[in-house]
Image (tube, rainbow, N blue to C red):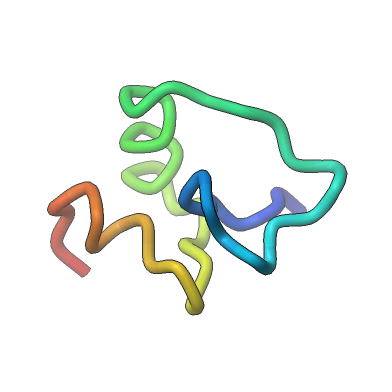
Length: 49
């Protein structure tokens, strides 16, 4: 199971998270990877729910 997508400054990001580009984050969210419910990267990226 994939780790949720987090914003870069999220307090809930885990050590196993890796940095990704905005394009990669948008793609992951569009493909159904969950967004962190705390930092809401989908909202920050202007993506619809």
